[in-house]
Structures are given as structure tokens and as C-alpha cells.
Length: 125
Image (cartoon, rainbow, N blue to C red; front, side, top):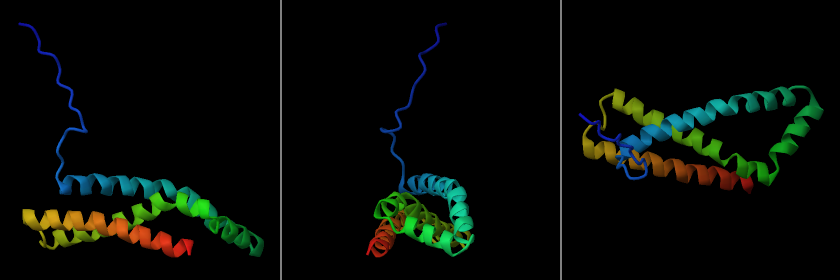
């Protein structure tokens, strides 16, 4: 009996619900935040070394190129926070119906983008 050829799934052709996208993005944002910890701790250490270290960190963080480079981490923080609030609501048995869950998922993703852009806009100003 010949074996059938393995079926390879094309992830770009799969349909994922908004809840699945939110879950995937929640995991990705958590990973980005964890990866940012060493840099954030290094900056904190440098800023606490004294006035010269604080000025060096402040000057480094005032560069517009670095601010734009921080956009993924700003998004990750906003998305992870808002998705976490949504999960807390689900733990309290709020928004468990399919239509409400879809709306909340899309709302979290949209709000994270808008909030990230607003924070970046204020930081660049």
C-alpha cells in the first residue's frame, strides 16, 4: 500500500480568526518584551552610575532614530497590556460569546496600534 504524499500547510493561506491572531500577537509581544529586558537593565545601570551616566542615557534616548527603533517594543508593551486586560475580562466571564470575543480581539489590536502611534508621536514631539 503506497503512502500518500505529506500535506504541507501554507500558513499564508490559512484562515485565522481574530482571536487566534490576538493570541499569536500576545505571545510575540511577550517575547519582544522579554528580549528588551537586558537593554533596559543596562540603560538603568548606566543612568544610576552618576550624573554623567544619566546624561549619556538621556542623550542616547533622545535620538529620533532610536525612538523609531523602539516602536516594536512600544507596540509590544501596548498590545501585551491591552490583551492582558482582555484576558482578565475573560477570566471574569465577560465577552465569552463569539461575536463579543471577535469585537474585543479586533478592538485590542486596533487600540494597540493607535496607542503605540500616539506614544511615539508624543515622544518624537
